[in-house]
Length: 148
Ligand SMILES: CC(C)(COP(=O)(O)OP(=O)(O)OC[C@H]1O[C@@H](n2cnc3c(N)ncnc32)[C@H](O)[C@@H]1OP(=O)(O)O)[C@@H](O)C(=O)NCCC(=O)NCCS
Image (cartoon, rainbow, N blue to C red; front, side, top):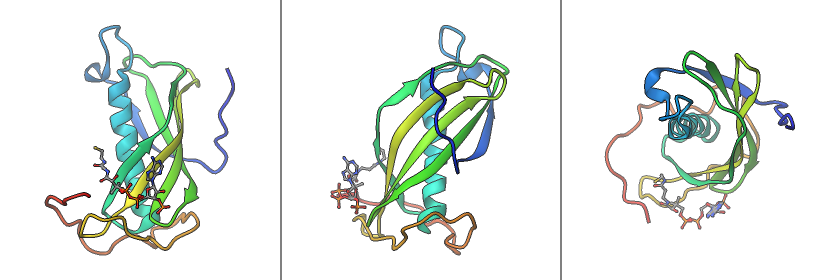
């Protein structure tokens, strides 16, 4: 099993695996993991693109390499790999902090920045920020947006 490239990757969020995160085999349910990653990627995209209105466009092949059991600690890492005009592409790695094994890798997670009209909107960035300098300064607007 190869070790994924985690250079420059930030592992921010950690999860403690609870009974409700398990599948019928008693191991980590993949759906829970994908929900956590999607949320993590959304927050990462908001910080990078300075826009609360970001949506998941694409999640590429997901390679589940190892699992976790109740009580394990897992950590999620993301890094931006491409800034498009309206999109941001990220790579994800999830590791088991106890066994030190890689749980999964996702080569491409694409989020799109959209405007109040629901249409893709240029974000104007081409490199990673490690600060909070692009964060919107107003609360996230709630309510339904009509996507194209
Ligand atoms: C996201 C959405 C607004 C984009 O609409 P669209 O008509 O594809 O828009 P565009 O063709 O202008 O593409 C927008 C960006 O997405 C990228 N994109 C589109 N399809 C893509 C694909 N299959 N893979 C990777 N990137 C893609 C484009 O390259 C473009 O990026 P760029 O501006 O950086 O070059 C639309 O697809 C949508 O509403 N999807 C549903 C999103 C959603 O609800 N997600 C939550 C999960 S249910």
